[in-house]
Amino acid sequence: MSRVYNFSAGPATLPEAVLTQVQQDMLDWQGSGMSVMEMSHRGKAFVSIAEQAEANLRELLAIPSNYKVLFLQGGAAGQFAGIPLNLLGDKQAADYVVTGSWGKKAVKEGAKFCDAKVVAQPQGAFTSIPDPASWQTRADAAYLHYTPNETIEGVEYHWIPDSGDVPLVADFSSTFLSRPLDVSKFGLIYAGAQKNVGPAGMVIVIVREDLLDRASTQCPMVLNYAQQAEADSMLNTPPCFTWYVAGEVFKWIKQQGGLEAMAEINERKAARLYATIDELDFYANPVDPVSRSWMNVPFTLADAALDGEFLKQAEAAGLSTLKGHRSVGGMRASIYNAMPEGGVDALIEFMLDFARRQG
Ligand SMILES: *Cc1c(COP(=O)(O)O)cnc(C)c1O
Image (cartoon, rainbow, N blue to C red):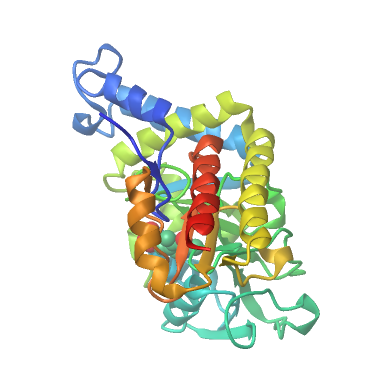
């Protein structure tokens, strides 16, 4: 067996220690005589797994007690509808800052339910974040939605917008748990699991309790935050196995030293990779340096005709899934929490060597 360094944007690499634990638990979870996949979600064993995962997540993010944590199905994209259905109340308007492809999808879905307005978006390509002074936000909006990390374009906020009295809603999918976060600044945070948390099939929603009173009567029960909170996210069968693996990832993050330690490692990994891209004329990253993502690093080669050769040789060197998203081309290295520093070092070494041989 040999594992590669997997730079996939999602589903993405998981910590090897977590995979090994899951393998050990596979046939017989803690003497239960069955795998987590085969357990009733109502049984004592799974309920303890679910509770422990939530407790560890609350500890990692220091989630205040007036927030509910939900483990739901439908992915992050399901929440593009879930958010307006739950948060509009008697309001008609919702504001969206769009800094990349996922924000664009969020506002498009939101517009099915309300007057969803793009209140800020960069001119031209998604390579920067518009100055907040220019955002055309509305005081009567039910919420302000933004995407802290745009997974495809590699544009990340390294600060939290101030939405005043309007609840701030954020799609953290691809940067969730990459660093400490002041949850109290948000009305709602959501994150699909398959980037930084676990296997696909689950979205985590962290929502302030006072926002649970305004769901539309049309809101499907599986998307209804108040009903799901009341039922401990088990209104129907939850994504049990993903929830369990996510719980193992939370334990692993705690063992690494928590989110402060993750932030230090993530910042260092990203800085080294961007430094390599900037040093050599052979590579380029188009993103405004103050908004470069720690998690997703897109880059192009000076000669796009070499893209195929780059990918082929990288694959042969054990560096997998570096092809950029079809909408932006070039390469993309996703370097989530679970990508070891050694993986980034190996990529840098390969990039230097490839440039030397071609240049
Ligand atoms: C991957 C991703 C999504 C979509 O997640 P699904 O779980 O596939 O619905 C949404 N937003 C962001 C920022 C993402 O990275």
